[in-house]
Amino acid sequence: MKKHELEISPEMDDMMTEHEQQGQTAVLVAINGNIVGMLAVADTVKREAQLTVSELKKMGLSVVLLTGDNRRTARAIAKQVGITQVFAEVLPSHKAEKVKALQDIGQYVAMVGDGVNDSPALAQADVGIAIGTGTDNNLLDVTAAIDLSKHTVRRIHINFFYAIIYNAIGVPVAAGAFAPLGLILQPWMASVAMAASSVSVVTSSLLLKLYKKPESQGSNKLAAEEV
Image (cartoon, rainbow, N blue to C red; front, side, top):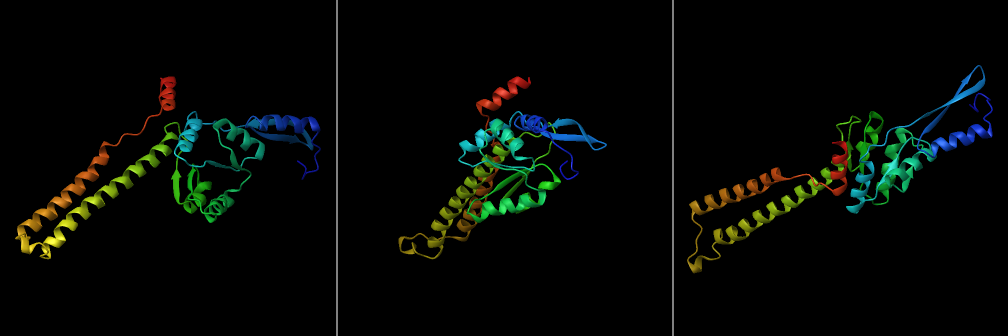
């Protein structure tokens, strides 16, 4: 409006500020060189957003809001869901730069985005989590994905331990270290040990199929309300 030399009265500015503090984006409308009205639009905050932020903080993670909305709107939304660090008025092309800036100070970044505009930032992040905007997409799946990844890494460590045990016992025996004691590794013993090693590792990995997504008290409350 200022670019087209239209005057914005203090009353208009105060009204815009009021809506922006409620998490809404105020849009002025002009006809024939006169400002005639204002529209207030806002994205609906997902019901589970606050709970998701809370669960991520319990995991020891820092949560940052990165958005193209104006500062007042962004801070209002952040306050609703419990986020204190906000980067507002960030162009889509600059989101990746913000992610890299966090990485440059030694932080590992997981970026959660829901659109094509977020693609560069998702690619720049150490972990990119693309989530849709439909009602079937639940932000709590982000915490579940992190929890599942931790279980997977733990299972890898267990499998590595199994492999080490078999080799730590089998290699010295095969090398004849215990031959003076009459313990010699026969070919059939090596075959059995190799098969047992593979079976134990595969069986251990298949136990991940028993994984169940953790349910917090807050998510149970949300489910009850939806029912």
